[in-house]
Every structure is written in C-alpha cells, then in structure tokens.
Length: 138
Length: 254
Image (cartoon, each protein chain N blue to C red):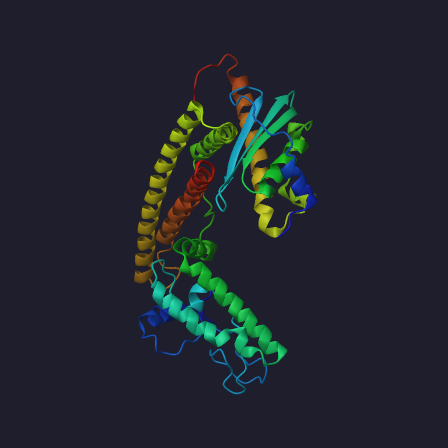
C-alpha cells in the first residue's frame, strides 16, 4: 500500500508538533487511542474569545495517524469553536486520500478534536460557575 | 449469524461435529445448492457429485465453520492444522491448473479464504479478536474505552524515549545511563503487566468456552456472553497499548 503524497508530506514535515500547558484555562486537551493498533494521539487547542488561536499535537502511531492529526491542527487554527466542531473524519479522508484500512486514523483525529473541544468547554464552564475557584472538584 | 444454511440446526450440528471422529467426511456450506456448471443438486461437498467441478464456498461461511469448529477459544491447534492441510489439498490452485478458468478462479477464491481462516484461528489473540467481531452483531457497543491514565502513560513513555534518542548519539553519559536503567525497569514492569493480562485473557477464554458448551443456540445466555466478550475486548485493547510500549522500548533501548 502506498501513502498519498499529502500523507508523506505531513509525515515528513508535521505541522504544529508540540504541546501546551495542560492546566492552562485557555487550553483544551484531547487524548485518544485506537485499540486496534495501539496508536495514541494528543491534540491541544488554545482558545481566545471562542476562536482557536493555536493548535498542537503529538501522535505516536503510523504515518496516516500523524498526517491526520497534523492536518487537523492546520484546519483548527483560526476556526471558531462552533466551526471546529464541524470537522468530520470524512473531510480528512478526502484531503489525504486515505485508503479504507486507514480510515480509523481519521476517526481518531476527529475523536481527538471532539475531546479537546469538550475539555476546553468543560474548563470554560467551570470558570463561569466558580470564577475564583481553585478547589478540586470532580 | 449463520454457520450453515439451516440456522436453527447450526449450533447443535456444529457441537455434534466436534465430538465426531475426524474420519467423517467434512461437509462445508456451499455458496449455492446447485452446481454452477451442470446445475445438479450440490449438498455440501466441495465438488459436484455429477460433473466433479469445484464449488465456491458460501459467502456466509465464517472461519470457525470453515474448519468445522464451534466458536470456542481453546481449540486443538494440531487438529486445526490437520484440517487445514486436508482442505488445502482439496482447494489448492495447483490442482486446477489444467481446468477451465471458472474452476481456477473458484479454487483460488476458496484457497485464499482458507488461508485467511487458518492464519486467524491459529493465533489465540487473533482468534479471540475474530470471535468478538463475529459476535459483535449481538453486542452493542463492544468497543471499549481504555482508561485515560493508560494514554498518559504512553505519552509519558514516549517523551522519555525521545529524550533517550536525543542523548544516545552523544555517547555514554550519566544522564543516558540513568535513563536507560529507568526505561529497562519500566520495560520489565510492562512485560509483567502484559503477562498478567494474558493470564486474565486465558481465564476469559475459559469462561466463554464454558458458556458456549452449556448452551446450544447463539441466543442463549446472551447477556452473560456479552459480558464476557466485553471483558475480553477491554483486556485485548489495553494489551495492544502495553505491547506497543514494550516494543518501542525494545526498539529504542535494545
């Protein structure tokens, strides 16, 4: 099986590799894994005024998983939270020409986006309820 | 879930086959009840009784049924191998090289299926994964979500491995040795965990087999079976992450 040129490009020059301070209030973190292959993906967003100003990822897995998350961070930057929610794994499959056996990599990326958005929204919600909160409640 | 063309009798029939001597002729469900060539009735032989043409295997055939095995997880691997060779001799394309194109194609298709079935069933882990996929129709949402701290553990280890890879080319240093020791220790602990997981998988396999042996129909004791399958799936997917970590450690630190 040959990877598409776009996958190879993202694999060789991954965009936005790295991480943000996980505890920061303006950061949302999503960590997801694919039980079939054991790939793990961490995707983080930095939000200002409901807009994603920066995104970073770290993925340990195959080329398609790395390319999917690299592409996802590119797409996320500059998007509103609402628009970010609309990114579908099929968009990633399309853009990267992923073969059927690698579709789960794009699913992983979508899951990671959703998880990061969810994490940010949870944090933002808690901030609104308890503005001075330093307590740990679960 | 169809083992044989008659679903109601399937499980019972298969259970029955298991206890029969292997000398009985093996009958596999065929893709059709009529010979594709001479249109006479085909009742389950691989070859048409009238015109002796090879018959395609049924699309509904699963790997267990292909080997005349009940859906159990502890299987007699020698018996599996024996059946594989026996069926291979029937289907191998080499025996059809002088036949017409349709027969060549059918024998090739049957052989490919048989090879895939053997490869899957031969390995206990793949066998279990396959069984879960087969039974998943009956189990909603069998996909498990590994605990978040397992992911954190993977990410944490990967950071350490990255540091190791950066330090290694600079030659020996106390930092490198300390890290190597730490990672080797980590690997030992992970290997122990993997062994433990495999032990608990083994006991789940037993649990499953016992359930299967005391029920005749696939629908019986469904809830209990689903619980065992979910438990298996959970261990299997967690095991994948642990195994990957062990492999990455081996690759990096040697």
